[in-house]
Length: 306
Image (cartoon, rainbow, N blue to C red; front, side, top):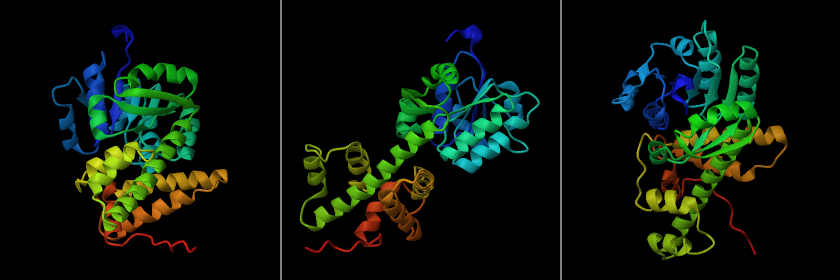
């Protein structure tokens, strides 16, 4: 990107994924990078970079040209964008707001309409993959935006992502991200069931995963969530917990209802992660659902009768 025309970047939300993303932007972008988070201790992630911190969203909006958001969900994104102390309330507004969070499709499209009336372009660009991928700048980013907006933000998204897909107009990025997440949550629960079943039937779980990985049952979930989390039973706090799974699945089910689409598997996976939270497994990495299944605490389906 030409340094003389590089925009000032603003970044809101320095959490598990937002922190590494903002750091990559601060290290790679030619021009200024400004950051804001309600938690001051999150600023440590930007130590050693040129990033500067702002005291408020309004201050950020008045200085930045393009602002990226990495927030927990729809309500947070709406508040940051449209709240009384939000970005759109500033005397000088950014040209573009890019939401890297996972929200409902309806939220993305509503924000695009509301912000558009104020002269602010909007794109939904939710990210996928792990915290490690965020640190390496190798996230997958699914973008919903008008063509001209996509062309403007794509060079900046390459600071944080190795795979950037323009999925269509505003909201389409969220559609793809929600489907991606639903498939991961459903598959994780299904794999957990089969790992427990295999072990109870006499097959070592490590051998089971190795064997299945060589056949048509192989998958990203098996090699990552299965081998790296469920097999060693490593479910750290501070990652992506069952509570977040519930949020995303609820967004999927809302979209399914709006489009008149069956989403039975999504509904079943919702019940699994809901049971995980109810039974004290919340706050830790969501593949912990396998421990719920081991203790026979998850949703129970009747056996198929011949």
